[in-house]
Structure formats: C-alpha cells, structure tokens
Amino acid sequence: MASIMTFHIPNDTELLAAFGEVALRHEHLNHILRMTIKTLARLRPDEAFDATAFDGAAQMRERIRKLARQRLGEGEALLKLQALLERCRRASDKRNELMHGIWAKELDGEPKRRGSDQNWYPLPTAADLKVLANEIWILADKLNAARLDGFLSEALAKQQKANEHARTPTGA
Image (cartoon, rainbow, N blue to C red; front, side, top):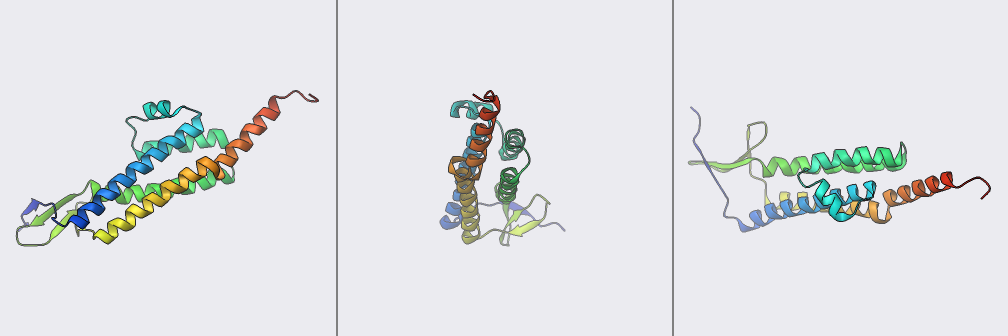
C-alpha cells in the first residue's frame, strides 16, 4: 500500500533561511554568467541582459563555452574556464535538485524531499544548504575574478593584442 503524502513546508526558520540563501546565491551566479557573456561577446551590460533574458544557467554556460572557444581558441585559458563551468554545472544541479523537488510529509512520518529520480529522501539540513550556498558563492566569485582581472581577462587582453599586431602593417 502506498503511503499518503501531503505537501510540507518546514517551520524551521534556519532551514528556510538557508534554502533562500541557496536561491539568492544561485541568482548571483546567473548574474556573473551573464557578465561573462558580456565580456566574451564585447557587449554592454544591458545587451547581455536582454540577450539572455530567458536563458537558464545551462544555456548561459553553453553560450560561454561557444564564445570562449571562438575568442580564446584552444589552450590553457579555455580549459580553465571549461573546468570552472563544469564546477558551476555541478553546483547548479545540486541546487536544482533541491529547488525543484517536492517537499512533503507522510501523515504520521517525517518530512521528505522527492528527487528527480522520483525517490524520497530526508530533507537537507540548514548546514547542508549553507555549504551549498557557500560553494555557489565561491564559484561565482572565481568566475567574476577570472573575467575582471584573472586568467580570462589576461587571455582576452593577450588575444586582443595579437589581433591588433596582426592588423598592423609590417615595418610600420
């Protein structure tokens, strides 16, 4: 006999605050993904926002991969960026599993969360959620630092300089 489940929202304010922090940090990451598209495509911020208005994190990561391959070509900077984007994907997957799962409770049981595999799992703890929020924040910070003054910025500047040198007539 199947158990009867009802929708459930815990009244644990620390858990709910940590859940909200995961959601907010992920939107910070989405913002940095948009700004990375802006940087790679040489857009104004408003153009990047408009161009990605309905894109989720997965679509933006894919666009970054394509733009980076075009702008950077094969090499260390592209590989570092791809590695960082993969870590972002894994963090987003963890976030999505929590955000898009159903939180419910058996009539006489403990609260549970249904995963994308349709199985039921215990709810995460506030500590688990804070770890994930921090992981997402660190990834957003690393990506932003890379594009502003780190390996991505350096590679783009080097590529720009090479392009300018190639356009300069020999002996000029």
